[in-house]
Image: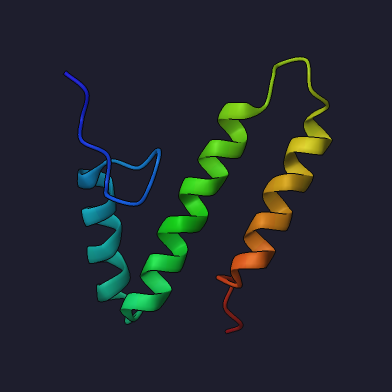
Amino acid sequence: MAKPIYPGLKHITFEEASLLARVCREDGDDTKQTEELLTCIDDCLGIQKKAATSDDHRTTIGALEKRIMQADILRKT
């Protein structure tokens, strides 16, 4: 039986989203940051899933990098 997908996402299960939210909360992230991270991860999983094995890996990596930079989830320490 398939695990239920978290509402609003396409690839992340409810269990995975709950675990990530707990970790983010422990790290001091607010709800908006957590939602942005979940959405970004879900989008990146979709990009990887759509990438054909015959595709140039640089194209896929470029698409992933673009999505991550768009999310602005990388923090400056």
